[in-house]
Structures are given as C-alpha cells and as structure tokens.
Image (cartoon, rainbow, N blue to C red; front, side):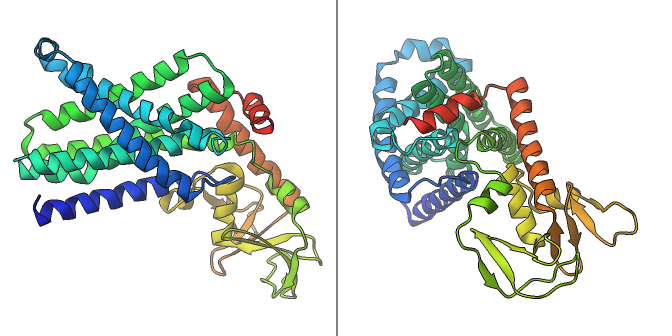
Length: 368
C-alpha cells in the first residue's frame, strides 16, 4: 500500500472519529465511557468483517448475475448491514449495563460501523485502481457507514431492552439497506464530475435523517432533568464573581451553578438567573434537546416583548443583550418553555416515526 493511500486511510479514520464525536454530542445525560466505545469498535468491527466475508463466499455467483442491476441493493447492502448488526450483537454482553438509554444503541452501532469501515477501506486501498474513486470512497464512505447503520442501533436497543417486536429491528435493517444501497449504486455509476456533488448531497440527506433521530431519542432519555430539577438538586452552589444582571444591573457576587460549559448565576436581589449568551444556547441544547448552532441559532432569536425592551429572546422566556453577550430569565418560565419544547419533539416523533415509549424507557432504566 502506498504512502498516499495510508494517509487517505488515516484521514478516513479521523473523519470517522469526528462523526462518532458528533453523535456523542447528543449523549447529554449519561455519557458512554471511551474504553467501551474503543473495544466495541475493535471487536464489533472485526466480527462484522468476518461475517461479511463469510456471507460473500456463500452467495452463489448466479445470484450476483441474476441481480446485476440491483446488485448493490440485493447483495452488498444487505450483507454488510447484517454483518454490522451481528457485530453489535457480539458486543452486547460487554455493553449491556452501559446501554441504558435509546441514544446508546445508536452510538455503539456507530462504533461497530467505524471498525467495519476501516477494514473495508484497507481492502479498497490495496485493490482499487481508479484513484479518484478511491479518494472519494476513503474520505466519505466511513462517515456514510456510520450514518447508514446508527438507526439500527436504536431499534436494537428497543428490541433487547424494551422487548419490542422483532419487526422493529427488521424495519430499521431495511432502512439501513436502502440508504446503503442508494449510496453504493451512485458510487458505481459513471457520472464523471457529477459524482462528487451527488455523493455529498446524498451524505447530508442521510446525516440529517440520523441526527433527527438522535434529537428525538435525546428528548426521552430517562436521565433527563428539567432545568428546575437541576437547580433544586444542585449541591452547594458557590458564591462567585457576579455577571451583570440585566434585570436589576447588579454585579455583586452570586450563587453559581455549573454543568459542563453551562454557567448560571442566581441574583439574590431580583431572584432572576443570569448567564452568558453562549450558555443560554447550551441550556436549550441540554434541557430541551434543541441543538441550535451557528445560523440555526441566529434564526431563533426574536425581538423581546414588549417593544420597548432593548433585548432579544432565544425562542421564548429569556432576555438577551447581544451587545453584552449576557442573558437573564425567570427559572419557572424558562424551565416550562424547555419542557414544552422537549414534549413537542417527542410527540412529533411518535406521530411521524417510530420511537420507544417514554414510560417503557424510564422503567427499563430503573431495572437494568
């Protein structure tokens, strides 16, 4: 294998790790241990590759000729997605206790897909002669594999933990096969210079599908607390140098509450809470599953009411000074807004797409 191909595989690994990090960004309430994810990547990847190679040997050549035009849908995608599912099953005893909320199934399935893709990339690097297609495969197929299969992990969680009907997993498998088949079919076509924009567009569609599912399952985590619960359960908030309270202009020391990058302070003069504009966005992410970043966040800002207020508001029930990068809010009002956004996300998901029952998820968490 040439040095150039080795570098491409290393880049592919880096992109895969970025995708896993992006998925784990949604694991807000009970983060998975790195060691478990590492071993699932190794063991699940190894098992899935072995299973795929065995299945390819079993499939008669006559079938491949019979389904020549649908080869990617009828042979390649089903074998590889089934192999990755077996890889996750092989790892289940290792992660049974850690898989205690729906998002965990998606994250561990993504780790198996990463391991599978890295081995597949090696075989492509050794055997493929078309260098431009090799570059495309090595750079985007690893993220593709991760996003194809992640949804199967959610269905796997529902079947083994919530005892849902096996058809749930069959449907998820068919969804993964369809996305994988479309991906491989386009890669196999002679589209010239169009192949790059088409594959990038297809990747973002598949990625959007997966991230939407992640947002939905984050909202039903049994470990999720409301903002009010977080404040009430917080042990011993310290008095620290105070942010300016936009409501009463107080800059005195204030009780401080921290959660990751979130910093909140309670103003004892007016009883409002003060935070930075950045922390406000993180509050919406953590307590409402509202993943507002960049331009999406800017689109959610509105002029505060009443009109004479010199502030804007993120969604509702908070006041933001863009000039000072500070915000303040009433705890009860904002907590209710966050809970309502979370409920809307769950209700919408249940109506439009399969999602585990919230009470079943909570009951399973209490009795792992």
